[in-house]
Amino acid sequence: MRITVAAVGKLKEKYWRQAAAEYIKRLAPYCRLEVCEVPDEGFAPGLGPAEEEKVKAREWLRLARCLRPGSYLVALDARGEQVSSEELASRLERMALAGQSDVTFLIGGTLGLPGEALRRADWRLSFSRLTFPHQLMRVILLEQIYRAFKIVRGEPYHR
Image (cartoon, rainbow, N blue to C red; front, side, top):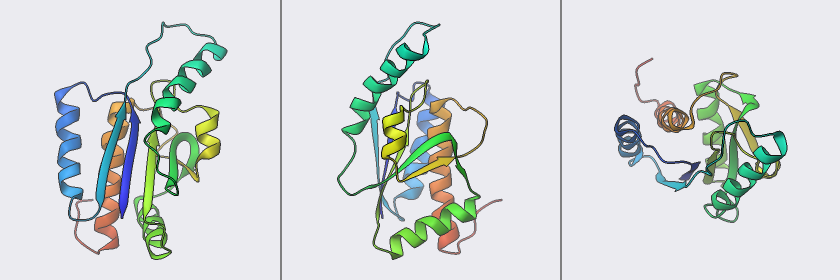
């Protein structure tokens, strides 16, 4: 499988970069993984809804450059479908068996993804109704992708 994690914002702290690098290394035997990182849009606190949408739209323009034609788009969205690790593994396995072996996961910036990105997504996935910093979300996503491959292959992984 070819998996892309398209994310707004840098992993600024060393510990986030180290954690992401560890899962990227662990994923190497299972898939072709690419991380496409685009700059976040600076903004002042206290924006109104219209201004927030403009910020998200500018970030989306940059993020959209990471997309390949035909890639299955998974938007991380707090209002999306919540699944277990086993269900995520099963879904990725079914996609691969059906010939859909190019998957792109979208992680928005501080304000999330704009409506256009959510409408364009093939699947809206939620890891929780809780809100996570986008840097932590990237590490969680990489870990869950790794866990999914371990589950699919029946390999042991800590619980």
